[in-house]
Length: 109
Image 1 (tube, one colour):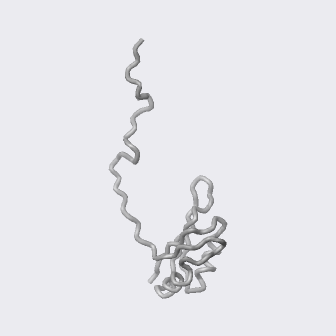
Image 2 (cartoon, helix red, strand yellow):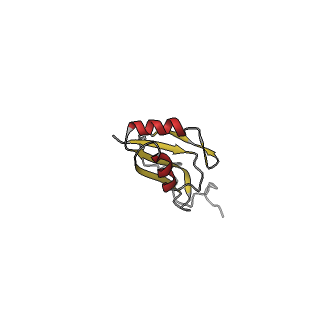
Image 3 (cartoon, helix red, strand yellow):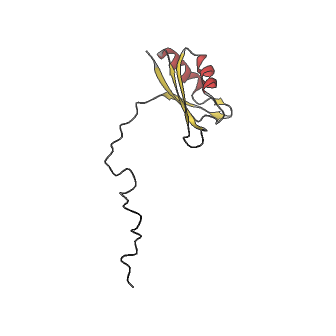
């Protein structure tokens, strides 16, 4: 059974191959997803690593959580399922109308 791990506080130069090598010491790695910024294409500093076995995942957590890697102390733990987002239509910061309601009230000439 696969176990997905969250890996945080990564150095920005770390690649998916680096993570596969690092976690592969503890068991077979089935997938690595390094999260990238949409605009710059640069690492966002975290990734998800899927280990083939629970034992490998547990060993990786024990060995790597809090340990320094490329000058940063890693956060490694079992990934939690994504929380459902409830979209209520507003989309975030207050229902903004058109661009012409500048708050000045009606113009008087």
